[in-house]
Length: 243
Ligand SMILES: [Zn+2]
Image: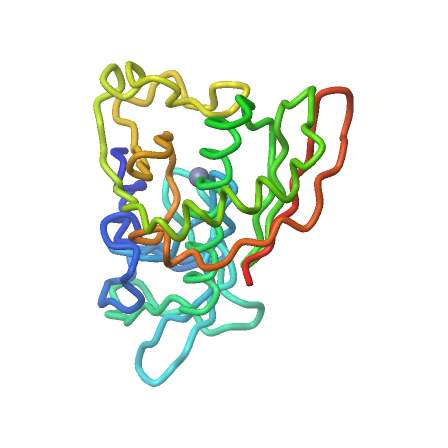
């Protein structure tokens, strides 16, 4: 499939995460969903929820509310929406507000993971991301008394440092030879994946990751650590919000 292709669809979202509008052709269109030759809709994955948006064609606006990943990448239209026939040239448009906020949130979580790993030695055990807010679970048996306040300060210092966020695709062996590349407690990379996409917050955090990110950490904006909860013996749940 390749890292920037899914079935018959070129993944424009991975080539240029700032792209919000593009021209494309409908390859399939039925109850299963709509397949495009080129799509910038982030299909969801790695914790980042899918994009919303529209397809514009012949004066019709088909609202897209989700995706389904099979052999092809299926865009799921809103209920009752008119579907563009196969072969139609359409303009795709991703809803900017949702996507941009998800990019900021996703990059912010990588900053959080990077800081928690560097300064507290803890790995990620789970998480959830919504536009502008998220929770992340860490394996951290001993929690320092001022953990919440220190964490917020450290994360925002890294945001303010405006570190570059660089995405690259490496061969499997090269990627897995990088130290600490797998930041989750369990290795989630499929055994047959030959190429691995890497997101590098330069100087802070390198992770295998398939999501969309801002270009540098200043774009994340201020991160508020809302809560640190205990979920089991060693598991700590950190809730954050972008402000
Ligand atoms: Zn990620």
